[in-house]
Length: 182
Length: 182
DNA sequence: CTCCTTTTAGAGATGGTGTTCTAGAATGAC
DNA sequence: GTCATTCTAGAACACCATCTCTAAAAGGAG
Image 1 (cartoon, chains in turn green, cyan, red, brown):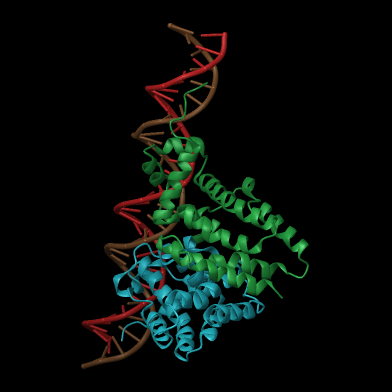
Image 2 (cartoon, chains in turn blue, green, yellow, orange):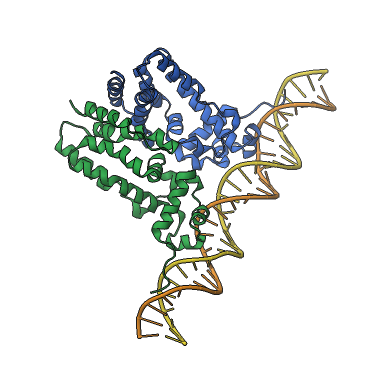
C-alpha cells in the first residue's frame, strides 16, 4: 500500500558511501548525497530523519559487513586468518573499507545515536572467547597482531584509493605468528 | 615599530592544536580557536589569511617536528630505532600526534595551499638514502616495518587520548627485525 | 609631540548546510 | 471511482562559519 519507493534505503546509503570515499566526510552533505542519487533532499529526510542518523546507519552497515569474516575466523580459532581478513576484505570492498578504516565515527556523525550504541559487541565477544581459549595470550597482544598491524598495512593504500597489494599478506602473517607464539 | 603582537603565531597554532585534539577537526572553527585564545577572530585573520592557511601551517609544523627524529634514526642506519620513534614521540607529544596521525590533511584543509606542497620531501629523501644503502630491501617492506606497523600500534591509544603503553615497543621491534632480515 | 606602522577589536556581509514544510504523484484497499 | 497511505519534489527557513571591513589602540622614528 502507498506509493512505492523510487529510491531504496540501500541506494541512499550507497550514494553516501560513494561521496565519502571520493571526497571525504566533509563532502557528505545531504545535498551532495541527494544529487549523486538524482533525488531531492526531501526524500532523504523522509527515510532518515537526520544526517547523523543516515551516516550512523551507513557506518553500522559497513562495520557489520566487515566484522562478519573477522568474527568467523576468530571463532574457528585461526588468528592468522583473522589478521588476513582485513587486507582481503579491503580488496573486495574498497569504498566501504575507506569509510570504515580511514575515519572515526565522530568525523561522520556529530552525535552518535543511542540506538546504534553497541556496534562492536559481537566482535568484542569473539575476541573475549578467543582469549578464553588461550589463557597464555593477553588481549592487547592479540589486538596488535590481528587488528593493529593489518590496519597499518592497509592504510596507506586505502588513502591512495588503490587496493592493498598482495605482497603485504606474508608480512602480516609472519608478524602474527612471531608476536603470538611464545 | 608598530604595535607589538599580543598573540604570537605559535600561540594561535597551539590553540588550534588543542581544539582539534579535544574535539576533532570539525570543531576547529576560527571562532573556537579565537575563543580558546581569548582573541577576536579578526586577529586570527590578520596573521593567517584563511582557515586553510592556518591549518596547513599547523599541519606542516607537526609533520616537521615529528619527522626530525625519524629522519635522524634512518640517517644513522638504524631501522629499529626509526620504527620506535613513532611510539616514543607520541608519548611526549600526545596532542600533536593525535592531529598528525588520526586525520588526513584533507580533513583539516579543504584545499592544500601550493606553498606547502613538499611536506614530506626530507623524509622521502631519508628513506631513499636508506634503500640505497641496503639494495636487498625494497621500499614497501621498509615502509611496512618502520611506518605502517608503528602507526597501527599507536592508533588505538591515540583515539583514546592515552599515551601508547610501553608494552608495544618490543612487539614493534620484533616485527621490524623479523620483516627486515632475510 | 606628530606621523607611521602594526595589531587588536568586533560588527556585519556573504554563502552554504541541515532541516522543515507544503504540495502533488503513485499505489493498494474498499 | 474514492480514500488512505506512502513517497517524491523542491521551495523556504534558520543557523552557523568564513571572511571582510572599519575604527581604534599601541608602540617606534623623526
